Length: 111
Image 1 (cartoon, rainbow, N blue to C red):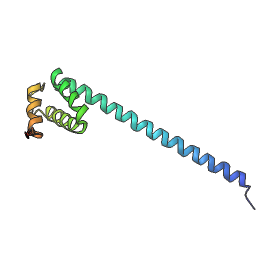
Image 2 (image 1 turned 30 degrees about the vertical axis):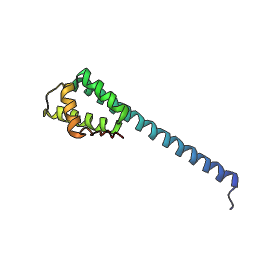
Image 3 (image 1 turned 180 degrees about the vertical axis):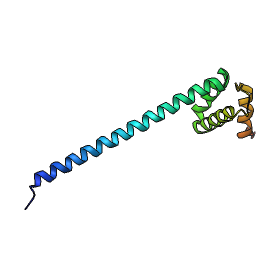
Image 4 (image 1 turned 90 degrees about the vertical axis):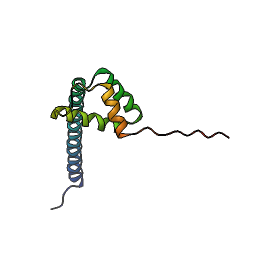
């Protein structure tokens, strides 16, 4: 018995469509999970940081997003463990940032 080529094409198309739907569903689930985690992180940041400290982190995210995210997550973790005082003031955030990333010296050469 010989299969009709159009039958195998249809089944292949069905498999491809099903696979595409599965990938779309996984992608949507990942995006939903990422959005949920981001909302949870923002809610925690509102509790852990003063408005001034949140503003400083927002400004830092514009210039160095990776550094800002790492510092924010680290301080939130410390606050959840009770290792730092909540809310984190802007001055405390500044000192943490200075320890992590000391100021660069700028030398001006005059000719």
